[in-house]
Image (cartoon, rainbow, N blue to C red; front, side, top):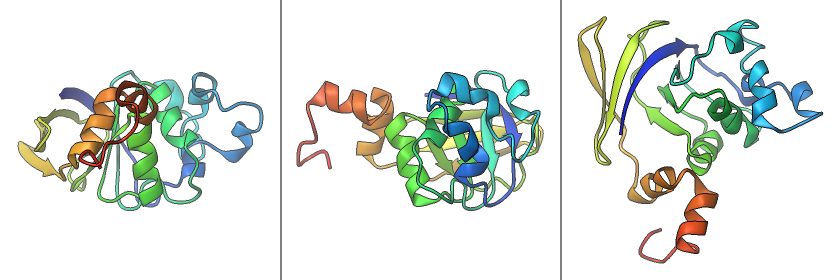
Length: 170
């Protein structure tokens, strides 16, 4: 997998209610509708500036707060295939994998808003380069079962394809 993406940078502790506010979820959980409100609590103009293929870049503890799955689906609905963060809240991390959103744990401290990133993921290594800084960094690799779930497009498509988990896959 290779992504060439524009970085959209946020700080630490971006919680799921910042990703999509609870008030917005009262009427619908449809990502196609909710994507208009993506991260509005942090930047009200953000959703209107997202381009398909952008990636979110954050600091520590991305996705903390409530364990709502819709946070990952709204990010995907906006056309964002991956989130790079120094660390993720565990529930968000699993919700991301289960919905087909690639969570990349790596040092994000040198990435600035608008940087063009080239992300190469070969299944074992995840490297990304930033032409502005000349750096090539390595992200944390994912276990094979998570790679298979992402490759299928999420947990539900994976289960449909494989009929469940076999003992050797888990």
